[in-house]
Picture 1 (cartoon, rainbow, N blue to C red):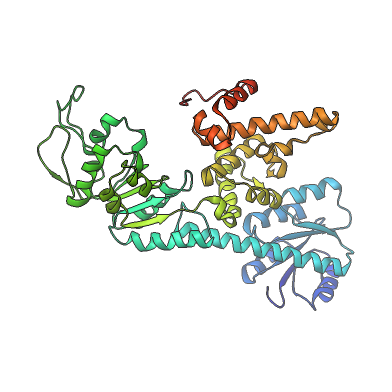
Picture 2 (picture 1 turned 180 degrees about the horizontal axis):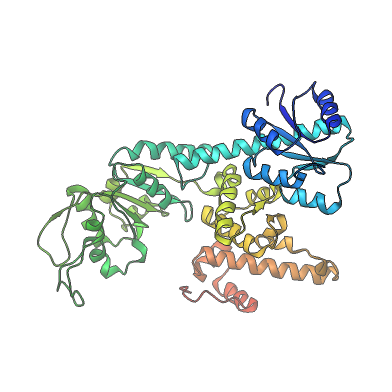
Length: 461
């Protein structure tokens, strides 16, 4: 904060302007204006920290009109409204339009100074956050974060993007592995060429080689035409092999040849085809353990692991949650048509206290859900009540006898806990029971009692 911050007073009352200039002049550099035109001349010439605006101007435009213009032209500058006769409706309208606060035109001087300094402090924090967001967006448009762990990731991206080295990205579900791959591609010399995504887990096993390397006409039943594989489609660019741990062993052998020789052979073909493709792979699994178990080739692992990048889970970088929350609020606001959508600090603090098993993706989905469910433009603590059953302590619950209320809360907790555990385990009841420390039969009984049904496409084993 500068030694003498700049305060602009907009008021058509000459006596008030002069009085304020004298009273505030020992702590601030005070500028004065009588109308919008004069005010904007000063704003364009000086760095104004706070504006004190008369709500009930008597000549020309109203204070509300000027406030509206200020919020459009200089939204970061906090505006404090000053008035003697404003109605409650007018004051509420001013706050709705973005006024920081309002004071009497006969203010307590110490309180006014404190209010101006508080407004400047909060404005400086907003400016700092915006600058950081703009800098991060400029450097890493899709990735958001300022924690030491993410700064290390950004540094690795910058280093490896300048090369053609094969990259292996590791991290839990929802940490942003695809975003890292895209950033590497976009910052590389291949950025004008294709970026082809292959989810190795989503391809039927007997079609994996055809999808990756293509096939000749007549190579198998249903191969009515020659098909280019993903490697040929990615020629000159980057291929991103997501969930690489799910690649079958027979396809791993052929992928190893691509990495060693830069050649492919279509299924049913006899001709070797040279490919110029950078390979980026990603997994949420422990590949060294898969190698020990004989489920992943050791030589392929070393070929992929030339330049490893590990993405930490969100619970290990909670300092990034305020930035991420604001980023997702802005994206959600555009998607649902609510441009004034915002979030309170206590709501962000609550989000920082969560474990986020689904990481950044879960955080984004949670914010979008809260925004859709809420009728207000500001998301508060209560907007996220669905995250934690104990927030459901409403008046209806408090009106019930203790034991009845307790049983109801416990039932809600039991249902939420089981749903989350089942979701984490992909609705595999055996795996979920192991994680919960329960027998499979006990969990099945609880699921039945609670009326929990799996999603339509789950594999409920």
